[in-house]
Image 1 (cartoon, one colour):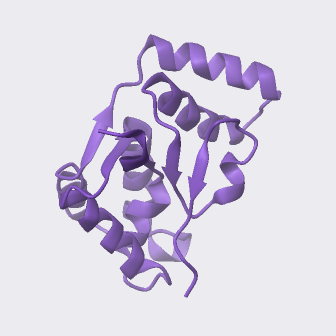
Image 2 (cartoon, rainbow, N blue to C red):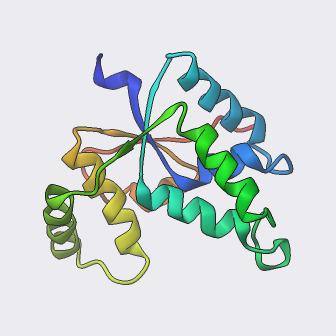
Length: 149
């Protein structure tokens, strides 16, 4: 399969596909459904699923989705039907250390670097996200967002 069909998905894609009140809900859902249909090969890491669980189960008044643990876990199982989980192995750790060093990263920026490290370790160059600027500093990463409505 060509690399142009392989795409890493950021946490916000999963959250947006879950939350019907979000502007890009339909586009996120359609993107995941296209993955199910084989139009894309979608990938994520344990980090993405952990972040999803954190936000999905956080109360709505604290900027979460307010789902129960059971609901959020059911969603993860559904995502796993179209999203392949990538290992965060020793190569990912080495890539992460190199990125932190090369870019002088601190704090929350290291989460983004870990995503890039996972992508690089597994030969991925595309990411679908709503946070385009988070990945702009990293060379060789093609950032894709949902079309504006």
